[in-house]
Image (cartoon, rainbow, N blue to C red; front, side):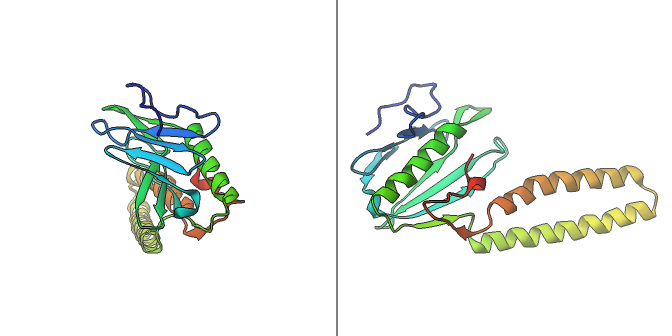
Length: 202
């Protein structure tokens, strides 16, 4: 298993090669640690641990999951053939007010994991984006908000409320940047070991 993290460490002990990775999912909980070994994916999350041979990994889902504390946050959901699931995040809690990005270490580890699975002859299902139902709900939300903002903007212009109109334009731009980016990156699709989805990696 990976060696314990230093108290203030945010991640990877061997980030240059992508062999090891670690992050803290919360300030209180223990660090989640991962290592790519000859036997498979070795992991430890709190009191739980295990080693999954690369051929026993059934599914990997990569997605983009921003939160209020960190807009650049990526996630890998990995499921074994027996139904167990582990989550790897690209950010790590450092303090109450700081969730640190670990872009390079996360990307290196996820890329190396796929390379080792491919070498082992894995037939795992590789999925990019969020689930179809969640994605459809996001599209509906975007459309409804766009219609509402368009209606309010037309009314503001018709009544000469220029300040209100400018506010709506700014709000629309911010909403499109945040929610639109989430929906665009997370479009459900399958990918291959040869072509990892760049939009779902930092």
